[in-house]
Image (tube, rainbow, N blue to C red):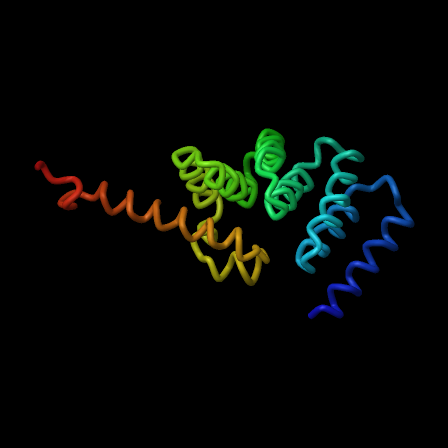
Length: 168
């Protein structure tokens, strides 16, 4: 797979050479670099994509993930919030925002954000999907798994007849 990623990276570099003002190949190259485990290089490509097109929501969302991998929570959350402001229909952005908020200790807003992601795309409840299709890192998967457990526990507690919902 590494060879395919390197080939893809080279193709996106060629697309950038041919169309330097187009943000899409920068965003795509950033995604490939991110999957290859090069978050700093990915960050540079996402930054260039948003510089070229400040309204390009996918690049803002991906910038959030790159910052998250570099453990820079404040800029990650800011990037995801900008992406959400630009496009509220991107499940990955809501999920990313939830990761950042959760890591920052804002549990309730994180749960609300992740629930928005699940409403838009129920596959975000499947950690295997996040790992194999979305290519989330172990750090992101760990946070998502914990958030999903909290959501499940709250849903269980809210069910009629639940021990946590019974009068004392």
